Amino acid sequence: MEVRQLEIFRTLAGELNFTRTAEKVNTVQSNVTAQIRALEDELGAKLFDRLAKSVVLTDAGRRFLPYAEKALSTMDEGLRMVKSGSEPGGALLIGAPESLLTYRLPEILKRFQKKYPKVELQFRPYWDGSVIAEIETGRLDVAIVMTNTVEWPQVKSLKLSPERVLLLAEPDHPLTRKRAIRPEDLTGQTLLLTEAGCSYRVKFDRALTAANAKPANITEFSSVEAIKQCMMAGMGLGVLPEVVVTRELKAGQLVSLRWDGPELDIGTRVLWHKDKWMSPNIEAFLGVLRPREAANSQ
Image (cartoon, rainbow, N blue to C red; front, side, top):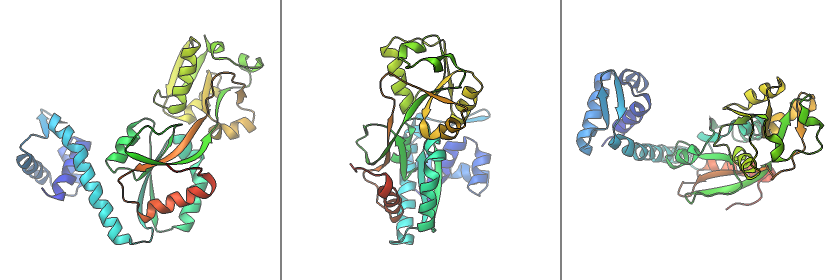
């Protein structure tokens, strides 16, 4: 089994198109076909079904993919270790939700790049639990997640400062006149929320369920910017971290309602795989976070 075969397999699994795969791996389509057939012969199983004009992974292909990704990631990691020695340099793959990536990380990353100019930072935003799979397969070196607890035995974590989460509205919303908002007060309201897998959304949903609150409508967004714009347009209430709306609160475009329900604040942590080699890049990144942000490591 050759590294080139695994690279072509991984690319084809993502593209599901022989022509685009050939372009991405800088070869001809016939070579992609030959390499995949050789890999299938060695494994004794079909990895792809060629159905008319479409290509799909077989069950064997889906089961083999994470192992191929892990093998390639381990090899890349080894190359980086040999090339970098003890000095931080090369790529560092970081996953973070949009809210932290846009509003919390820039100042930290500015300090990091000033101190370690040879490190190439690569960012991948995410919304849901797929981040753990990305860590396991080596697609991410570290990930910053919003969570109060670490429930994944395969990772280690560094605890960062928590994020305050607010219930928000535009200034003329009727609920701004109430001294306090209970979960049941949201019955009949229109809510503008992040997608269901979001950690603070989960806490908010639990509060509504416990109070038997029944909103008139819940609209989900994959972008916090879209939620802010829709709130300012008077389309409904939103739940977002304070760091995301600092500018709008100061400008009076949004107001924070006094939430009198279960706490919505959410912790933040940096995660990495427990078996991962702690490269100079990872150590340097954690070192930049620790002085101002870190409380405990576990």
